[in-house]
Image: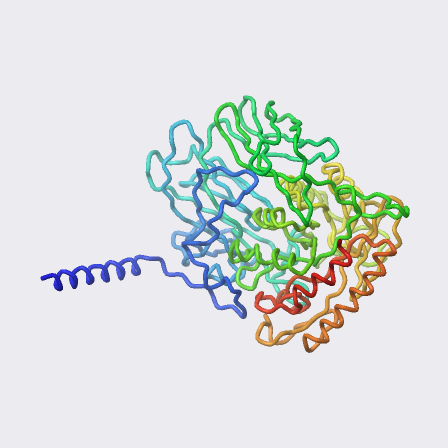
Length: 598
């Protein structure tokens, strides 16, 4: 009898498992030339589950990442009645991890749909957040339009409360996306419809986390934080809806380090009774709790650091961090992945890149014409990696929107194109304002979409005088900016330092080694200099660093090596594109770099 009962129980368990498997949605990554160590770990149940906004965190939220219905239709077609299949959000439709891996043409629209059921307590509002959608997104909830958003790199939010059905009813969200990619002038970085050379696979649709958040009618919407090291205080503005006082409490190592109470939409001064500075060697962060009198609260953090250009003891203009001259050395970091394109396969993978750069002895990186999800900057803050943040370039091949070398004039943008660029630039500055790791803004790269140069650079400096402004990175300098930036391959080289402007080398190196078995394409691979084995590659890199040391002595303030990883056809990475092969020994590099950065 006992054996029979065991058999029946085992059979029931097996049947239950089979039913669960049958009911589970089927999803697999699309085929890809390369996978990363994290590709096989990704699935509908674990796609980017971390809270996506570390500097304004609430405990009550619902992650909407996972499988959504999708369809690709003509641009002007109505919402589809039937969908083509399922797509894994938040991976772009062109990526293998989306499960689709299909280009979205400018003549088409990409539709998403999913349902959810999240009861909303009386008196609360429901917010629907998108980390980023490339490029124009229209959103409906239960058939009611929530609005549109344009811009591929900044988060946006809709209050969907009034569109929700009452109680525990099933709710529907639909999103339609149109992306012109490289057929119109808008910020899009290196994305193109026909990848080749230094131009990579396009990214379209939802590519960062989507989530729901219930909040009080009067709630915190945004924080603006600026460290004032000299004043031993944090300048804090709390933006929000409604009225009422706000209280902010800072803690350092678990102990209160200061507090302030004041009004919304007013800059507050939070004095610190204990001052520990943020540096790459010791990236100290303060915890911050912000509460409204009406009850809403968020958790945040900040770092205290000061970045500036001033004369050293020899009268040479250099970059100073927290009052000390600090040579900045790091790679060009493009943030592409063979499985997820713009979207790293996981938070663990995103952290891996930063940890690897730290192990190699770099103290900064230049985030190259891409804006990352908030958690990438969180890891830079937490692990101690300074960031020069590029603005994604806006340009089009059918018009002369790239300023060539030695060009006496900037590119001509229409009024609407210039406004679109400024709108997305402003959004980037606002959304990334609070990260202590970001120490410099780079509005233009190599004349790509370079228009109204000094007006834009001055605009950025006016909006954020607490950071450096590079002006611009490489090619045609127009005389403004905290840094004068040379690009030299393989280099290195430098401009003579100017009064009030540091001389920096914004790109150099580009030493390539195509590693068999780890290539995006079997052919068409290239580097600025290409080597056939690891030994000669390392010898060439050693020679660059030896030359760089001489330039540092002569007044060079920073150098950016191309690049963190191989990217598609480019094979000049410190790592292969799949992150499976280190082309250099990290410990050996760290010892070599320490001579320059310490």
